[in-house]
Image (cartoon, protein in one colour):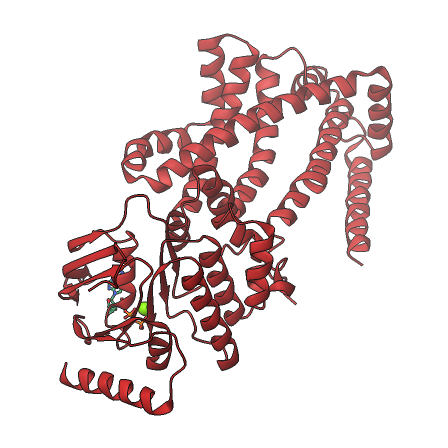
Length: 242
Length: 248
Ligand SMILES: Nc1ncnc2c1ncn2[C@@H]1O[C@H](COP(=O)(O)OP(=O)(O)OP(=O)(O)O)[C@@H](O)[C@H]1O
Ligand SMILES: [Mg+2]
């Protein structure tokens, strides 16, 4: 399942996950979800809103241990995440927010990162002085600067304009080719998934399970409109059957 | 405009004082000038600076002890429910013990010593600090904690950059209310069992019915505390809230 040469970076076997809600009832959120990601592999998780994508990422990151199943990560592996909401420290500047998470990052790395993300002019600003799109970019900068081995991104490109998304996509590709980073991207956008991933996992509505797994040939390379249409049709058919 | 209002308010206070002193006579309420002269006299002899200094040191020591222990215990109680349940009855008892009882017991058990005095003052301030910081600890944002743990921030980084800034408004409230409470209790402690300090001087003046002296010392100390509030507490508050968006 993993690409040739890559040892496994993430082995995920979730059998069942439910939340206890305030009324005392249990809400069944995740069904059977199992997959492995190889070293440097980029996977996209696509599913309807509320199906349990954030829950899945939280389990992988070790933030939620209350589930049936297992998550195997390399020992001492660095995990980075771009949360669905920026989660910055409001009392620290943009630069401090990034440096606190990634104290090892040098000035050259940071300047380059801030330049790519269009944040150079905002280094000394506080998060309260940023637009939501800018704050999301800081959250991306923080995760990139941390140089994780496994990077999880929870819908990182919403509320950003198309040109910027294109730039960030290029930056993400640059990142994963430069330094093999196993990446799990949660997204609503099929185009984003097709443009970035080696494999796409399509999730069903809650309780989520994997209804289709679509490998992408020649990932992250330019594609003709006809090719795109074929992949999209495949995904749509899978979603309809699930 | 702001300054004019403040000065006007102070001038009005002095006018009321002057009128009052005329009304009840200088024996009961000496005029502002008399008190000012007494302050200058005490200052010349060096007694004022000495007694203010001694009292201020006691305030600083007791306040620091109470703030440090109060913050640690309050954080622990706010974050760990077992500790909260264990320590809560103690806290309620301490909260409801009258200041005078704590002071007298401290002197009886530990003698009329400096340590007993400081512990007594700190114990009076401690429970309120704990309660305030505990509220702050309960309001800590778990999503920032998750962020800090994913990015493997060290315990020190978390405390300094994640936890403390969230506690800052609660600490500022504890500092505010704490300073005024502590100096009032320090005066009682000095009156009851210390051979120097503003409280001791006021005790002596009380025995001689020397209202001028009482006012001279009390007023001097109020001015010192006002200066601390203006030049230390308020700048500290501005510094820790510099990231907040100012209301237009
Ligand atoms: N802490 C919680 N307690 C109870 N229920 C929760 C909790 N967190 C999430 N849920 C529920 O679990 C389900 C999945 O939530 P989750 O946030 O994982 O969805 P999602 O796929 O990320 O949605 P979106 O695309 O809108 O971000 C939802 O029905 C949600 O109401
Ligand atoms: Mg989500």
